[in-house]
Amino acid sequence: MTAERPSRSTEAFFGRRHGKPLRPLQVDAMATILPRLKVDLESPAPSDLRSLYDKAVDGVRLEIGFGGGEHLHHEASRFPSTGFIGVEPFINGMAKMITRLATQPLDNLRVHDDDATQLLDWLPADSVDGIDLFYPDPWHKKRHWKRRFVSPTNLDRFARVLKSGAKFRFASDIDSYVNWTLQHCRAHDAFEWVAASPLDWHTPYEAWPGTRYEAKAFREGRTAAYLTFIRR
Image 1 (cartoon, rainbow, N blue to C red):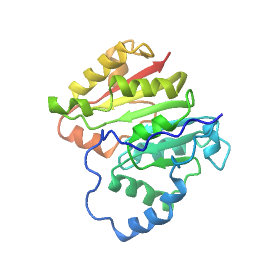
Image 2 (image 1 turned 180 degrees about the vertical axis):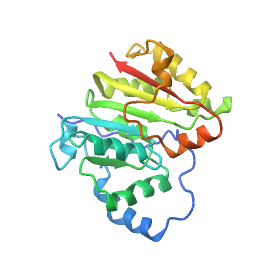
Image 3 (image 1 turned 90 degrees about the horizontal axis):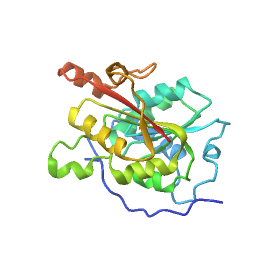
Image 4 (image 1 turned 30 degrees about the vertical axis):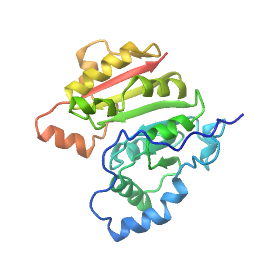
């Protein structure tokens, strides 16, 4: 059995797509490496996501909005027997990651360079071993809150694709978004917050490499929260 082909519509939870012009090395990497790594959403999803990789992997994890790819490359290097799918619609972020892969290649990585909801709707049910969402756009203004990625609809998407017992991890330096995420996840029947004390959400994840955005937040005096939820 294969998953039904999804709509190509986008819900635009991200902001701008372009930044500064890409350097020649980045342009070349995007032209030669990106096409080989992109998940083909025009084809039906395989019933077993592990078949997306040229090597044998024991599971598949997803990182949404990987920025420059610091954490994604770190995790994929730490766990070579796990397959990873990274989502980043911001072209400059994708170019940074793809250019790094030119000199530090990974054979357990695939990517999607558009709206994450397209990929989530394409994925088979109960197929993902973990979802990471780190430092997403907080959409500070109240009229923009509907664009926050954490929402009842997207949590339904997470619940559909995550295996029972899999983790959804969320990190942010914006208190209002941390509280927003806690409220939405605790109101959703599929997710259980795993935290016994404040130390649990103030302590970075195991072997956490940090990100450029996080370093900037710390320089500006903000602190981070690291939340973990289990798919029931």
